[in-house]
Image 1 (spheres, rainbow, N blue to C red):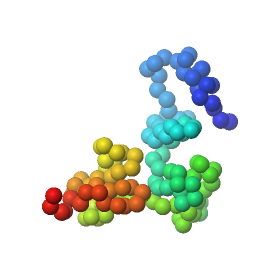
Image 2 (tube, one colour):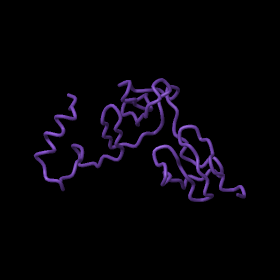
Image 3 (cartoon, helix red, strand yellow):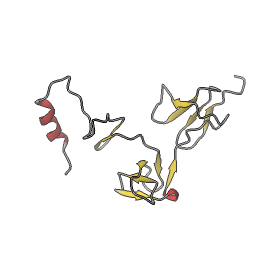
Image 4 (cartoon, rainbow, N blue to C red):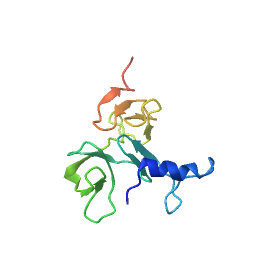
Length: 130
């Protein structure tokens, strides 16, 4: 059952402003995507779909590695591209979402490099002199 924004607004209008929104297991929504539709997710996206270009999330089905909500399909490894989360400059795993562009960029806590999550393109090499 899909819920329209109109129906959601009607529900929210009856609630206290301090009420929290969680899923059925009291998990916070950690990824919210609002474009033509509203998607609330308790999992962070792990990459992009090679067919739709949309975010993919971890699959819960054995044999598949990702799920694409846009296609409503579970995907094999070859059907999606994982985000580059390890630093492409120094290889460190001590990385975080960029403060200025958290949806598309990562930065390395070790060497200070910045890169695009989708492609791994380095936009600031922390080991080069500026």
